[in-house]
Image (cartoon, rainbow over all chains, first blue to last red; front, side, top):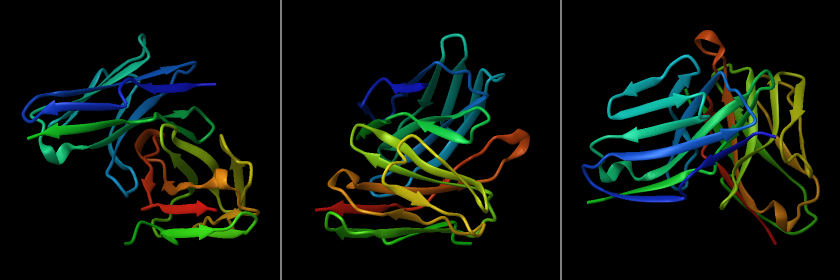
Length: 112
Length: 115
């Protein structure tokens, strides 16, 4: 069965630095991969989607890369702020099944 | 436009009791799903539905039932609650965007404790 691993359970960085989160998957060739943000006590909120034929996607201070050879996606937050502190989840769809599989998430804390 | 609404927000049950977690969406989304979230386990898919009258099992379906009689509603039933079902439950819905990619919209969650 496919598996998604997010390499760090928790990541602390200083304000203003770039946070880099990693998502690795196995046994699967997804057509696209998604990133969500989850704040404590709330449901996940969609941030970005990147397709298999896209190497990079940007949205304001967020950047996502997708390497289908390495089976890896990187999620970057540049000029990080304390308000960026949250848990970030990557997700992919088992193709043709409508089953969306999530990683366990990385809890990011941006220190002022 | 309320999005995805889950009720109740909190619930405490005794072992063996039954209950229904409600989920409603007002976005006319075809796809709806239920996840449970446990520490260190991430979000795990329980059941999902691709339209009214159609449901299927996810990764952890045992102990849960679902039905989809309308597009808007997708209730999750616990038939005989067990302590292992203590968790936070999330309902999500989506509809295919351009080129078929589904982006999930989540509810705020329902925290269930089974004693």
